[in-house]
Amino acid sequence: MTKEQNELKKITLLGVKQVLKTEDVALLTGISVSTLRKLTAKRQIPHYKSKGGKVNFYDKDEIIKWMLSCKVKTTDELEEEALAYVTKRNN
Image (cartoon, rainbow, N blue to C red; front, top):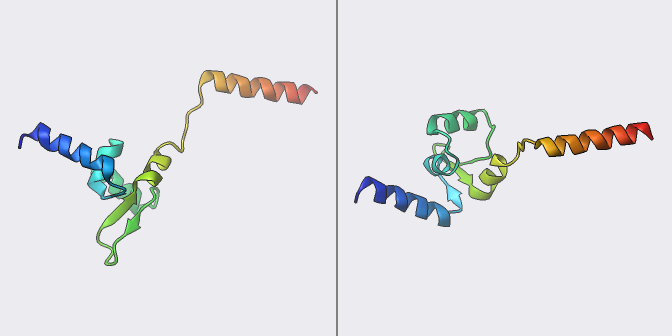
């Protein structure tokens, strides 16, 4: 199996998995395994541990929610908020 075929297989399997390992989360998020391990150790990413505590597991839906939790507002959104604030303040 070529490297490309192996990567395609991993991505395909990622689509059907709900419980992920660290390497799966790295593939899903684009975050390196070492950075994920640091985030996990600092409890900054939602995760679960195996009974013995040696393997970390992640819920795919929780990871996606975590990825989307720090939205950066668009300029239009910021302008709308500023206008609403000024309008409310002047009334």
